[in-house]
Image: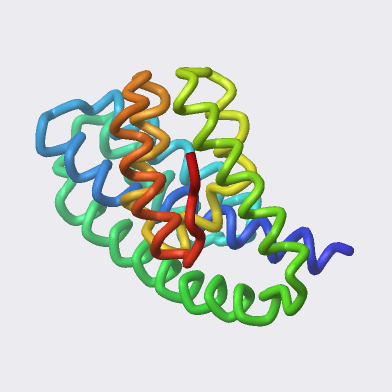
Length: 181
């Protein structure tokens, strides 16, 4: 019960926020402090939810530095270190959990194949339903390639369906699942 929920929260945090440091650095590099602050604030909240108290504290400190227009380098370095340490641990945990929970039956694989086929058809039809379908299989994609999963979601959100189909085919091929027209 609670252990399963907590494991899911940890995996979700890892998969949902693994690119946040890169996005945070881009925001700072382009002096978009509002975006940087939003990323930090989100991490702070989720860190609190999963009991990552040190990351939550580093987030608070970095937020205060931005608010008070202080030099960010020391606090950003400290935040980044704590964030990266946690993500390294969660990466090991997530992959370990994935190996434990790999389905031995073909039912899950058949279900995934069906969802991939539905997503493909939705993209071919230019349907906004594609995002709803993607939500159900996004973690499967993130295990294969977090960057490609993000690119796929962005392409769908931008209504770039041809690009989304290309990415979907690449991810499906990596998963060993062929999509048919």
